[in-house]
Length: 254
Image 1 (spheres, rainbow, N blue to C red):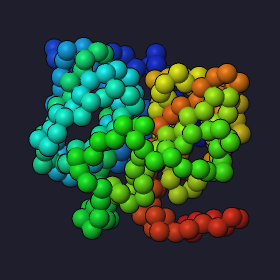
Image 2: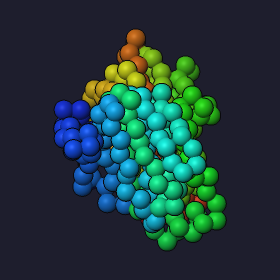
Image 3: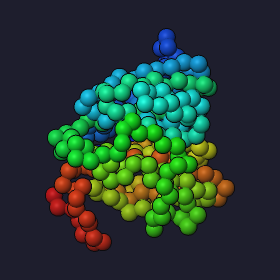
């Protein structure tokens, strides 16, 4: 497995259907753990009603554009970075674009362990959250002026977790986490560098998507005057790791 992967903006072609919707899989074949991610665009004045799944979790990260979601329970205005997870196949929903929207749709297969955990306890669905309403947190791998927010926490929706990191002139310098794989969706005015396993830093810009397999150290840092702003999206690699706390200097059991 490679150290990391990047889907550049120029690699994702907009191919709109008759309904003004474009959907392209991101980094196909790079992860076989049951998650597929798609870069989506929706033209102004258009709408889409995504496929409903009884046995999969679906997550949306709305990165650009203004619009709204309507489901059987409510309507949710999208005016900033926002997040949505439907109630499986129990609550149809439609995404409407006021101006052109860019977003990522993630479809997550649920194994027996995920289904058990979700049946016992999960966040209320449908779930919608604006970025500005997400709880801030502090982490020692982030710069002193870096803003970090939690979107979905541990065991709120199976083995996935979601949060954001935002800063100018600094960012994240993190030791590897062997328990979780990580994807990054660059939003806002992102113009920073990503380095994995101490390799040569590569530019990472707004709209791009990257995947860091579990394990290596990684840095996502902006130069002075530049912004780093990304959604981090993590998936526990193995069920047993979900309940194992690794102390400094220790390694997860094989």
